[in-house]
Length: 429
Image 1 (cartoon, rainbow, N blue to C red):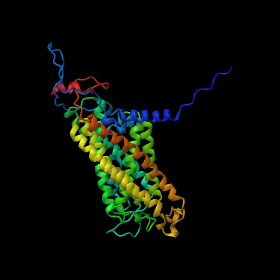
Image 2 (image 1 turned 90 degrees about the vertical axis):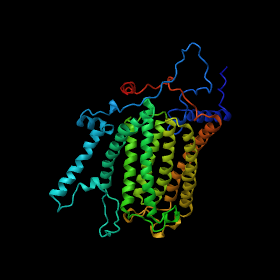
Image 3 (image 1 turned 45 degrees about the vertical axis):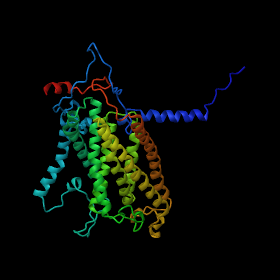
Image 4 (image 1 turned 180 degrees about the vertical axis):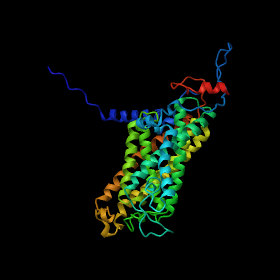
């Protein structure tokens, strides 16, 4: 007799698996969204048991610590740092790389001032439209943009590592963070606050100078193609490209400790770069700017809430997280739905003569492009709804289960080792 066929999993079991997957993500200390809000140690009871023997260890008072440089961020020599890409984590080496074009530009500027300076293409935006007014200059796309992006990848590497080593990690140590992993995570989120704070402001200033202010979506399409760019718009777009490319390199080269959702984050960075490049190429920078604003402004509060939680400022973190959900809902759902509605219903505001695929004229909006634009933004919304669901669950646990606000013991053992400099620095105080 033949063996009976194996039982097929039921639909109920599949649903259970999905629920288990969500639960694992929610309680995963290495997840990029939820990890910072996962309790890493058991909470301390409100009335600790009495110890008549006096053998229970009490938490040691936090000590101020001095500054120490991470051993992995010391140079192995400029050539070796270049060969191994170590310059991405060594500010001294990235500063030397940055200095070369600046010195060449200065040399040409003072010794050959009667000739156009070729090194300007590295440090400054290129492609000024001939004849555009000095009072209102306009720029177009050019192949020199690739060189500009490459240079500012190095700039962001220098800025990121300098802030991490000399500002953010010492700040975290001063306020009692000792574990190496927590120091890294705090520095990552601190840098994100600075970056997104600057570029959310810059994005709003760009939008303020456009007819699309504040999300007047019909002007995404009126007068298309928008191939002439104001200098701030072009600089903004290229710097965003450089930042996301540098962040992708940070992950791929292992400068940040890989998380369990490493593949998800790499895919997110690649898709982001694809959308930036495609919108820039197709003269859809007005829509791109609008999407950037919705993402960057909400990311400030996400990173800020994480930093407060790393510092164990539980009540403040809870208030910040609740505010984040309000900002996130408005920016990443309401405003992005307005953008999606515009793509679907206002696309035909593009003049008929520009509703063709004709790159030499700057027109890329053939009728099928409506779906090409709609699909990635809609998929992004699906991801945003999933993340929103996780965030609401975190807030529910914080309010009704009191997870975020747990008091934690400083002397409880954790899986992560202390920073190798922590004990030495504490003794020096």
